[in-house]
Image 1 (cartoon, one colour):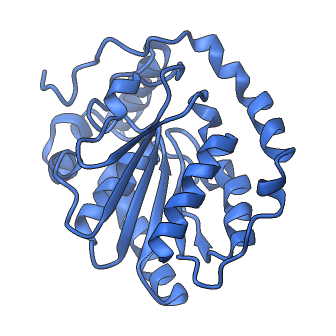
Image 2: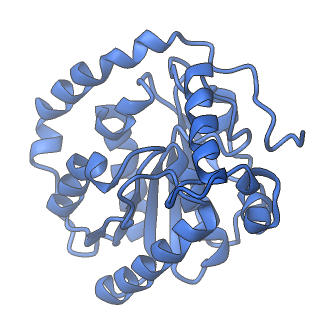
Length: 248
């Protein structure tokens, strides 16, 4: 079994820590900077990519905040993020080109968990369209270095894909030719001029935090659950800083 496919040791934090999501969301909703962010007319466009088994709706809170800041935003078109990576990226790249035309320049990609892996490869393939990629709890160094329960779900989805269930990845995505380029580009250095930011949490109960430390990116630690990274006040402060710096 290749290192890409091999499961790691899993996260240090317990899975029940993921129950913090509701508290993290309430803290965000009570944050004045979240409700009334400073608006920038030059805010870059942002393309959002959801995590494994999630869809664009999971990032709706983030999308609305970005809109209040002045960014043109786009979802990925993903309904359930469980398909073959290459098939998924075909639609994502169409959305990327459309958003660049609408926003008038290069855009920022923000991906949660598996969405960050997808975003990273999109950035490697399209450096002329992407100014930065922000990965939220994305195990780009070890995609299967996850909680055993999550690993079981991945394997169950792969079995469905193996027997031909549509919109599901298969074991060929892990070791076959269909996603060979994706696997290589996930670990490739980010192109010059594309900024990378890897946000991670040592209290992540889903993904091993060490697997999120993309060697081509700035590493930013927050104290968040895995699922809560899309609604955590500290993550929004990181995103606000990155977006302002990209805008100049």
